[in-house]
Image 1 (cartoon, rainbow, N blue to C red):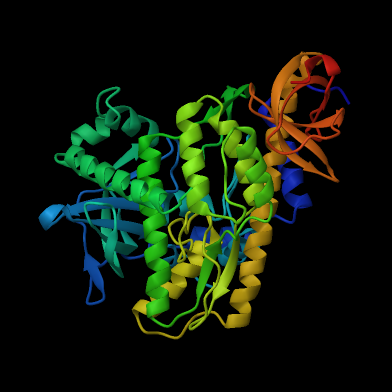
Image 2 (cartoon, rainbow, N blue to C red):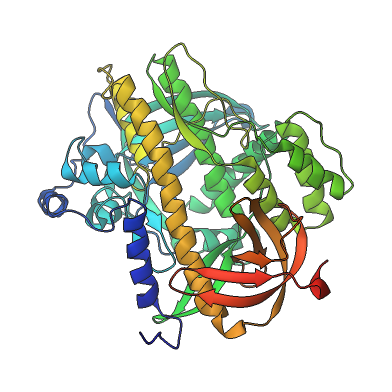
Length: 494
């Protein structure tokens, strides 16, 4: 077979689709799901005794530049003495995607949208997720609203959950909002066109910053990793660039964390089970202690989120350029999050990285099946109806969602590696500075800085561990399998 001479999208799309199948994910919707999609109608967005009319508020969405599957809207309502009520509206996907339908079966199988460098494999058909179940600009939509009362210091003093009809006044993008809110440029056109929206977002930003600061005081971790995003010139892969954080992303992130916590507490207060998102105490804490010691810092022998956050904050200030490398090492050593069921009267682990005890996933039902399950639990609790899932079924779903999330991450990582292999094929023989991101019996992996991708150290890996810095030389790439092989020549050991 003659391989293409330039990195191209079609090669990666073929790889992505094969990877989906290999990892037990469905790349295509069934004929039954597509037929249901064509026959589906937009859910009637009507207020009533149990559904509030909130269309008059200055709702807006902030998401990626190219996102059309809009899950959330936000709005702020200033109150007395510096207190602000934050409202988060989450698309009522369940109003259209019924439990037991063919569309639901597809979502239940994959459990998540899969975002590869070449192609997005949505959890729901695009006609739904980007239109009928999306909180699109100018569209009246049903939503679940999580209302949070925030004190001036960022503390949440109260919350409630209810159904409502909402109207998105402006579809905004992270980058444009961040440039404006950070004082680096003018307001985006859509923001400027809606009277009062600029002050709305300034209030939201101020509240989000206060909430973030308080969370970090409690031990929420300040992690900043460099996720590579594919950049295409037509159908030719031109580069992989880091997708960096900004104030607009932080605003949404902080509100979603708060909304997810309020959702978990609401279900607990209602005596309902919940699908919790947990990150257990890290098993490789001692290695994190060793990393800190190598940088002249001390961490306690027992895991402490607050102590780790103090260390991370100090390192971010001392060495901001290398901080993403340290963050990546810590993320690898913390391990992966998982879904578990909390039944009434029981307590499960909290989220170590967020330093919270009560946490679920509820704010992205177009993209994640656990959020759709939680939405159904919420609607049942609001209406005082029986729980729509049995305990055994919820436990099975928790395990399945965790497994499929891991499989989706493997697909995304594999395609990203294949894309990187395409870009690096012409650079065999070059040497790079790298950081060790994985070290086990299965092998040792490193990440180079440009492009920010991982590869395997096939020679000279002895004695290396996560977080070590090392010089490596590229000796081989395999685009089809995403193999990027390095060696550690003695001449470039750091």
